[in-house]
Image 1: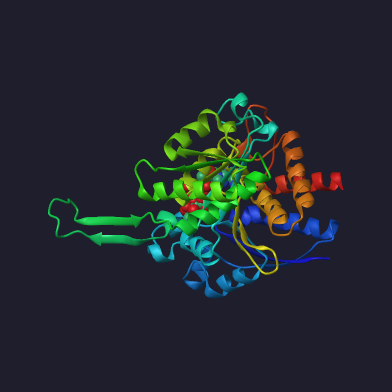
Image 2: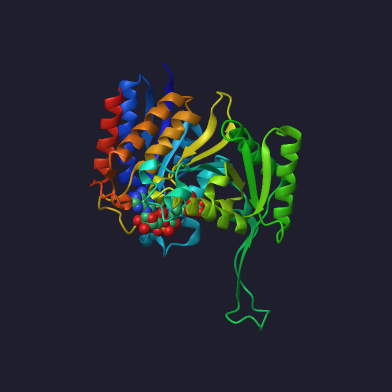
Length: 374
Ligand code: NAD
Ligand code: IPM
Ligand code: MN
């Protein structure tokens, strides 16, 4: 049978807590579905800084380049806020994305029926929601040059005398490749792509719109394409989110829009993601799987975190890295069943009362649901 190599990077805060539940799920698939996983674990973020003085050691980076898939928990925390920018935990995550060239970040937002009353929006607006945000992940204002904080001494009008600079920069090639990912994914779903930028105020937005249109016209004319200004897109996501199928957008807009989309599903603790790069010689894409949420310092260490986002990220690994679509569906169905049974971590406690469980209690319930379906 196939062997899959995995590098697990739990990171900081609730990262380790949710990843512990994923490890149990991995073991379940190894035992019950005849898959073999080569799992190694390493440090990222503040945890790596504490040991190595850097949020990502070179050896860890090298390992990440060699495995079939990286699973990442979360990075960051108040303890590290005082650190120099270059060694902040978040730099470790950004380095992984950049050096692995993971340009397409798939962030699905699905509203499970059992949670439709938990969204901050009304049930009839979110019930049945199933959208996919494709966020460009290796360029844009996150990485553009010039950047930095400089003194602005020659400008006496500037109170404080400093200037902070980041640059939004996109090449046509960077836009075309992520647009291709979005069109390919749309073909396997609702066949509709909405591209979001601010072509009304940004030249990079004009280029974005033109290049996405070019890829459409030349390669995917059968997919329905529309364009929207990203501010309107944010409003439409809250007004009528089911009008969308696939949304393709840049790094920063994608970051904001996907957090907003999280609330449509009931909790940020529900949203998984896949960060994919080019397909390698073995036919598998360079890949990292990470929940959309962060290290949640406010609840870390208390057994309160919802592990579903991280578990569903592993389901995405089964689907996109290992071509195990039916195993992915099996895991997703187990999550759906547990939610339908009213099993609830604290973030999901809502109108129906439900059965409150801890992080590991949610893991127990999902494993039990997998067992029941076996
Ligand atoms: P956050 O996502 O960590 O938390 C936002 C809110 O959502 C908090 O109230 C938190 O308790 C809640 N929450 C998040 N995940 C949850 C889960 N699984 N279960 C239950 N509740 C959950 O965002 P933040 O507070 O803005 O950032 C905290 C730290 O995390 C910062 O250092 C930030 O840079 C970092 N961060 C990391 C990632 C990542 O590693 N991918 C993503 C976002 C933020
Ligand atoms: C995310 C996070 C990251 C981002 C941070 C932690 C670097 O917010 O994955 O959404 O801004 O991309
Ligand atoms: Mn974010």
